[in-house]
Length: 463
Ligand code: M6R
Image (cartoon, rainbow, N blue to C red; front, top):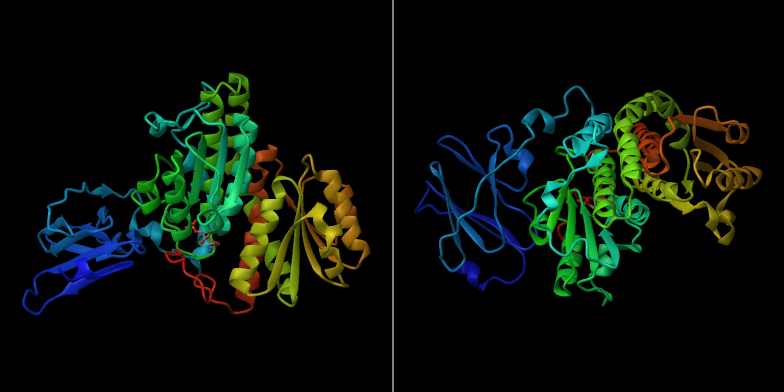
């Protein structure tokens, strides 16, 4: 009764001395409430991982749900007292997946889980024999293929994944695509409608800005695909259909395995959309599928750079500022590498498109400035090699991420980090790995709280 007078967002649990055997929980807007259903016991938590040691059967409350919890179970109703039926979901993760194991930090564990998480995300969704992609979850997604353009919305690391998702949609589906920060899109009167497909990318599915952007898009009639790690999340419920990532629980605030699995989910969706719209030949699809299934082994190989990045981190930890440069698909990785370093080490870092250097940032280059340059052998390689020469000539200390056997960049850079080569659209899944290790080891070296950096939350459920 009291909650019917409450304005705004809340997630509450209430006990009364008069009824000590039960707990009343309710939620609206920001924040999540998850019920765990055990045998003769019932749990309440704000997120699924907390429940996993006790049960994998959960109910995620929706806005204006009220649940009366007792050892026998949960009785759900709406705020105005009408009974509500919600099917429990069975969580595929187990408690061990939400624990650190022998790793000192969740972030390091999650970096090492990437080959498995990538494979889990495409497993059962591609057929190597048929050279095809299957996303049965989209069978009933109405209006998703009949569109003229695509807008991707996301925040933080998910935004960087969305930048690459744009390239995948353009390449595979031949549709014009844009990418926008969800926090901007939601407050802009964007010109979108039923023929604009919105793809919202969010690990947690609870990011307030991304949900706000989706609500704004839905109000204008856009079909919405959610790419998320949490089925049953607020974002998943708002969307027309969901393409899940199978990262497993990501606990470290710095997103790592969620990033690479977002890329896999977007790649699969791009291929599916291209096939449905007749924009790809069976041969194109078969080749793209074959490239994808190689990626877990290539990322596994890239994990071997950890010791080299740990050594390099000792030097980078003394820097006041670090510049990350990339072009084409590697621009998003430059932004992602800089974000990782800032958020967990608190060292200032900037990610830039190499071609923008001459338009301002080159003035920042002084003797000894660490510049992390992403230079795999792709269509932007020669121009990137030129950027490396430019900054090197001005005294920068260049750490170049390249593919094995590279001569030109290796001859110019101060430090060369080699990772395996792969198809251009998939190269970001490999080149991001050394940057994750670099941020991690700089932060550890500086004694930072790697998994819980200051001022940050894992899910940003407020504006
Ligand atoms: O759960 P989401 O993917 O929506 O989260 C978006 C951002 O808050 C998140 O990626 C944030 O930038 C990470 N801390 C980056 O490591």
